[in-house]
Amino acid sequence: MEPDEPGEALTELRERRLGALGLLQAAAGSGLAAYAVWVLLLQPGFRAVPLRLQVPYVGASARQVEHVLTLLRGRPGKTVDLGSGDGRIVLAAHRCGLRPALGYELNPWLVGLARLHAWREGCAGSVRFCCQDLWKVNLRDCHNVSVFLAPSVLPLLEDKLQAELPEGARVVSGRFPLPTWQPVAVLGEGLDRVWAYDVHSGSPAGQVPPGPSSASVPGAPTSPAG
Image (cartoon, rainbow, N blue to C red; front, side, top):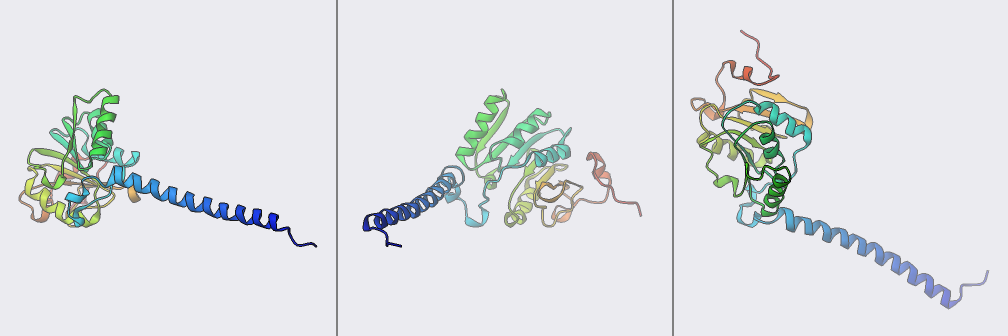
């Protein structure tokens, strides 16, 4: 077989190089797209927060939201979501009658997105989304608290909740349990699992004293007598 003509070989080489260049450009484009998402949605506000307190945004699933509402439904008082993201838990709480409902979120882009969702649902004047560091929020008038945070910050959160929340307040933690508190109810499996805790000022480390507190939770397990 005759060897390829120089022109044909050059054409083939160019095609291969263009193919490799195309793959490189696609990879670079994907990286830039991911970086753009980080810059616009995740990074703003993080610079002002110590690294150990930074929590990346991961939206709650529909099942997680459902479980949170199950453990809070019917309770009076202010409902807050710490690290409210795009506002889905706050809006769901408002729809099921948990009012007033508000969210604290450090990322201004996510706060804007949550307010847009509220406007589209016609309740922009009834819910609040505050662009504020949750570690600087005073929780003394909050009776229902939802948190979906990383395990690394939960020990510090326990201290804040115990120091600030009023007697009888309920905390619902999604994805990860509070490290030392004893839950009054648990719903769901795997990453959809949520834990409910009742705050009692006389109990050490936020642990609830023996009693029928879990009976007020729909579907909550109760401990056998004796």
